[in-house]
Length: 118
Image (cartoon, rainbow, N blue to C red):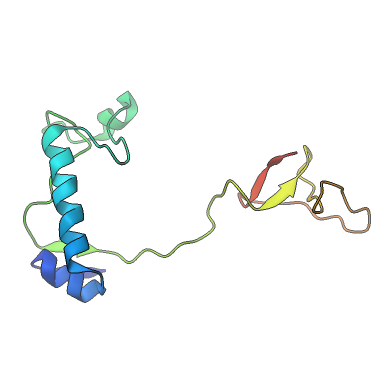
């Protein structure tokens, strides 16, 4: 967790581009002011709006980034889910390149790191 009193200090502590961070905040605040998230479409479903902040009349899922302190968490890419990865058949058996199944290896995918059945 990183805490800073200003966005400029936050960018410095995170080691990210200051202009990029400030530009992202200005863009996001514009979305919050209009009540329309053009990037991620937050607040477009009834379920999202139900879990949002009812005091935000335009969109309960969007509140502006306006005053500090500011908090941030570094996020690193991982493999929680994918639309690629290992190719599997309808029984989740891993396939060779080209789509054939190896009789010598009984390998099945587990979790969420495989593409859909072929």
